[in-house]
Image (cartoon, rainbow, N blue to C red; front, side, top):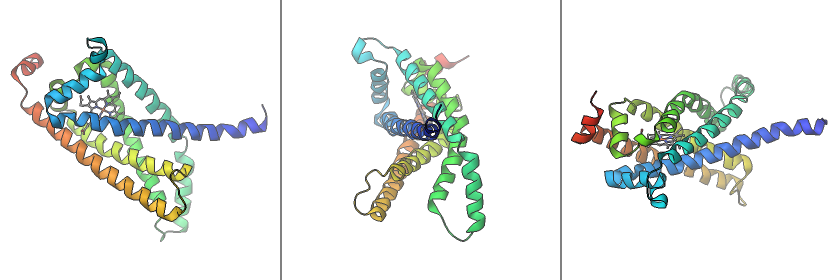
Length: 235
Ligand code: HEM
């Protein structure tokens, strides 16, 4: 084992943290849009569900595909959380030292890092509950079964919190990734930083609105379930 080999490990861990974060953020960018199909009505959400279950490919439903996807996302989620966790104590100490030292400076990037720590911590719990359900009961996804889970299963408060956490975390994360790896930097660093920050804000607002509208729609459907679904759910 050479010294060189050792010195490469942190860089590799850092890269893996960025890569898993990027994949998860892109997943969420898609997830919230697909899920917003409920805004077009129960039929649109039903078609979306059938699509992800491979119905249009195999001619029958395979919810196991969705369960396997959830397991894959869960694995990424765990690796990403583990790698991020390793940085919290040292960066926290630096933050404290920094804050004590320069109390009057407002350091935006440190503030954004704090957003990541707080929302990331909450998602250890909130995200796990959701992913575990999707992994073990993928056959219970659909406009009415999902709405039923949201209302009768009391998932709506969890989704409300999770929505705020994941939207902030994903867009702040994408912004930080772009800054860290110098994507889209262009000639003028300060200008591109400003553009990226505005894109981040736009993404946060747009996705929160979309997610809130979808969640509201699920609640509406769940409060007024069709007879068949309500009967099925009765004890
Ligand atoms: C393959 C993995 C996933 C699948 C199949 C999935 C599927 C779904 C479905 C079907 C719903 C509608 C409600 C329900 O049926 O209970 C939903 C809602 C939601 N999911 Fe996921 N999800 C996955 C991963 C994630 C992850 C990783 C996150 C964030 C960490 C997330 C965040 C949310 C949020 C916040 C809502 C509520 C949406 C809203 O407010 O409009 N999901 N998900």
